[in-house]
Length: 370
Image 1: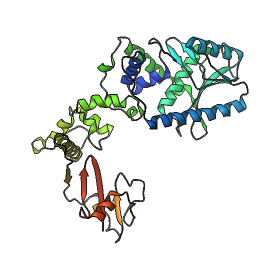
Image 2: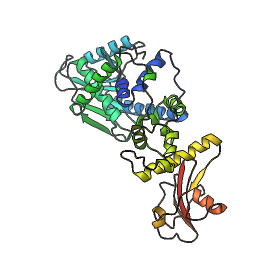
Image 3: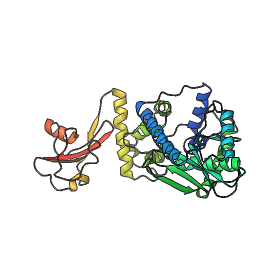
Image 4: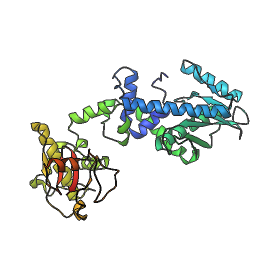
């Protein structure tokens, strides 16, 4: 649906709560100010899986609601009018209905009539259902459905007391609207106040957030962060570590790498231990050196009685390791590694002595073998 800038959807509210920059980038793409990045195959696959799940929920609803009505108007105005007409008729289930109460607009997957209470349509009201592939309710889905419930309050004159998520497990989770409505209403108020001055996308720096993992705009934001040598690209660093470093004015890889030098031994970062800070600093130094000379560097860490060194010796003929490529396998000595295990490959090639701990190319491998 073509969405004018004076209308805000459930996705807009969720984007504002998780990443305001995404909200502005979506707006710019609607006006052809910026081209939306092409979606990768994984994103397309997940989207298709979601549509397939939604179709299964639709078929399940149709079996219990023979008068299930799908809204098919081509324009926003037509779809809103069709939805209101279906609600006035008391249709038991509405598929892809459009709701509009300025400045809010929404399209829940399904609206189901509940024959309780009074609405402006009669002795019944409608409650929203959304189909989600997740196996449990997630914050974004709950906020989205709560938004629909608040929108329904303006459309039908009563707030639906329950919202429903049709999960990927085949079960439906029902939640109390009142548990979340105040939070979403506050987010809506803040969104309207924030967009009033007309902020530009460039005015919001793309700090990494959890929502980046599945965002179509990630390549665009990564370009900005790489241009600025953002500390988020340190191998193995999570969002929590990045936030602590940025708060301590360690904003770039180069600045973090400088902390590995002895002359900065007194530098600290709030919430991060000194050994942890030095570990990230040494990792950043390796990556900065590789960027400067194009050569992959590694460091052999000093011996220390820690981690796998505290385990008993492995059984002869087998190896025990814990690397990113073998996570999920049984841990401990005596485990036979697969052909893809870096420890097993290094052991066969004879390139490294046993019980060596290496950090190389942004990945940490701890392994031992006999």
